[in-house]
Length: 179
Image 1 (tube, rainbow, N blue to C red):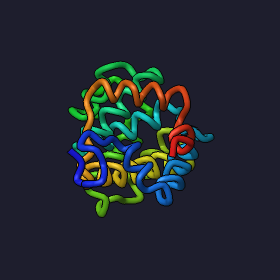
Image 2 (cartoon, rainbow, N blue to C red):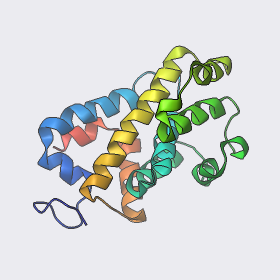
Image 3 (cartoon, rainbow, N blue to C red):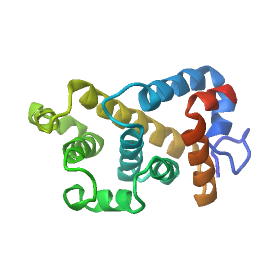
Image 4 (cartoon, rainbow, N blue to C red):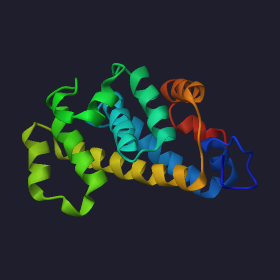
C-alpha cells in the first residue's frame, strides 16, 4: 500500500515515476547508462549486483524485480538466495566474489571501506571501471531501495516477471518513454 494518497493503493514504481517526471526522467537515464551502457561488467552481472544489494537492504520490491531480471539475462535461479547466505559458497564465478563482497560491505557498513577492499577487486583482474560501476550500482540501488520502501511501494511475483520482461526487452529507456 503506497504512502502517497494521490496514487492508487496498488501503485508500482512506474506510477511514482509518472507522478514525478521531473526527477524520474534523469533517474531513468542514469539507470539506462549504468545498467545497459558499456561496462566491463555484463548486463547480467550488473542486474545481479542490483538484486544482491536490494536483498541486503531487505527491499522486496527491488530484490524481486532485479532477481527476475538477472535470471532473464542468464543468472541461474537460486543464485541470489545463495549469495545472501554466503558469497564464498555461492555459485558465481570466483572473479565476481570480490566485487560482491565489496558491494556487501559498502551496503551494510559503508564507513568501513578501505583501500584493501578495492585492492581485492583489482587483484581479481577487474579494471577500475568495473569497480566504479559496481559501486555505482550499489549506490543507485541503495537509493532506489529507500525510495521504494519510503513510499510504501510493493508488488508480487507476477509483477516482478512483467517488469523483468520489460527491462530485458526494452531496458530503462523504455520506462522513461512511458512518462
